[in-house]
Amino acid sequence: MENKKEMRNWLNDFNLSHPLVIAGPCSAETEEQVLKIAHELKDSDVSVFRAGIWKPRTRPGGFEGVGEIGLKWLKKAKAETGMLMGTEVATAAHCKLALEYDIDVLWVGARTTANPFAVQEIADTLKGTDKIVLIKNPVNPDMALWLGGVERLYAAGIEKLGVIHRGFSTYEKTKYRNIPEWQIAIELQNKFPDLPLIIDPSHITGNRDMILEVTQEALDLNYDGMIIETHIDPENAWSDAAQQVTPDALKQILKDLKIRNLSG
Ligand code: PEP
Ligand code: MN
Image (cartoon, rainbow, N blue to C red; front, side, top):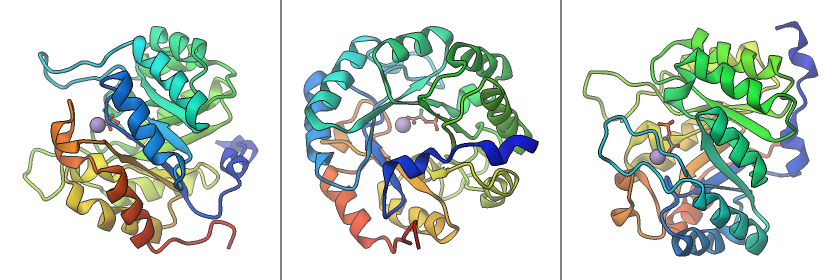
């Protein structure tokens, strides 16, 4: 895309001396859970609090998210902590509600990126928004599909765009939940050097013990940020229990990472 140079690097607005840190639970479960985690993360390097409100479950019968009421909790968490709030959107209705509640960061999930009709619907609904919009890679290792998602959002006049690398599904059993296929993210980054690239080690590993190593690998490859699922009681989380870390564990991970200075 010729106009990639015009893409505003919204990351600079954060004025950070380290990569962007997004953290919070896989799913918003209760108001108490959201507020507790947000308060624990308030005085850390976390700039954006994440929580899924609408959960795209691969199979029916699981917890599918608390829905709109969760947006009220996020609004409250923002008022009490000052952190920016982020959630996943998958339909036009989700986008409208998230904008109504003034959610700062909207991300497109991996299952949605795999569906161009859905991405176009999201792009049309968010047309011209000045919210930060992040698009995860599709579930399948298809760079063009990910690129297409970026192009659809950018063509809708959304300037604060970024991409999240959450790994790709494979039928083979590996040590990862979703294999990284680093070269796909790097190729995308080469096509859009101004597009912030964020690692999602939680969904790549599916295992809290591997979060540090995968995040470090990404930072060594010059990634711009990370999104790490963080829960007050990971073992009893209503979704993705094996991969979430406690706020204290997250702070330790942030300490242990050898972090490149963004301005350096
Ligand atoms: C999530 O972020 O909780 C999520 C559902 O992720 P993904 O779209 O990467 O599967
Ligand atoms: Mn999750």
